[in-house]
Image 1 (cartoon, rainbow, N blue to C red):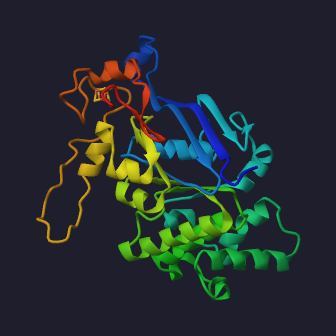
Image 2: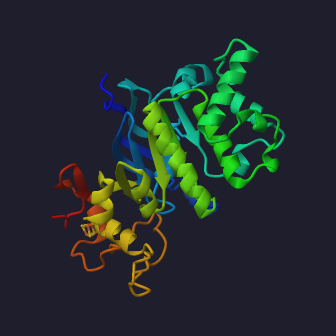
Image 3: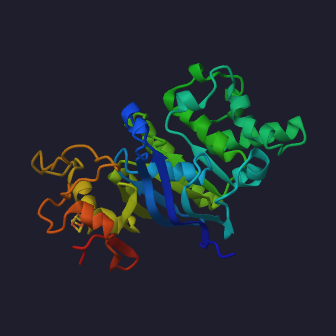
Length: 333
Ligand code: SF4
């Protein structure tokens, strides 16, 4: 298989969550409303590629990550991994080979680590639960290599420490080591640096890029931060209300966005310019609307002649606006 072949494909992926109605609704036998958290997402991730999935809270990006790591079952569409259909795969034994190849890095290292487990046990846990080692010597070797690759050196110094004895950056590196230790092909990193200081963020991001370069890992980097995605990713997919509204190279999406939502996201980003005046931020008003009650007007292009709910019913085609650059808006060039 070529080095840049697709490792993962999502085809028309859908996830719906029923909303609990009130007592009155159930007495009248009214059907339950379903929130379409993910609403027909098509995506591919290549081997050795960093794809950033960008959007506000509520856009559905974390749900996509959870479907890929099999923490959430989709209600429609397909998930293909290395060409095999994994959509219906369920149960610990059936999922074991898949979990060996796909790992997740969570945002909150405090919650991801058991406070009663040492660093060694936390990193060794996937090797033990997936029964991937046959001896203690092998276990120690793999844990040492993972800690070292995650930037915790010398690794032996960290074996006996507990999470509360580590800094925030070191804790997140332990979480990265726990994902790396079984040598996966794909890592889903959900806001992995959003809770860290700016200086530590750069170190962790550099560690992830180095790992991709050395191990040809594919990485799905989920973030709300467009400039951060630009720094780390090869391609960026922008999500809004459960759909991918724009996808392209990191440079095209950040420097030449075509969808009004991506333009609004870019313009809402503070920039520090040499000799430039302060200000220039255009605030993105309000929060993302509820997927259960899609607004009439388009929030990021109020003068669009189409009502937004109509636009969602008659879905805009994904128009090619440049090489490998697609935008889903009727107004795209
Ligand atoms: Fe918004 Fe209009 Fe584009 Fe639809 S066609 S996404 S309503 S700007």
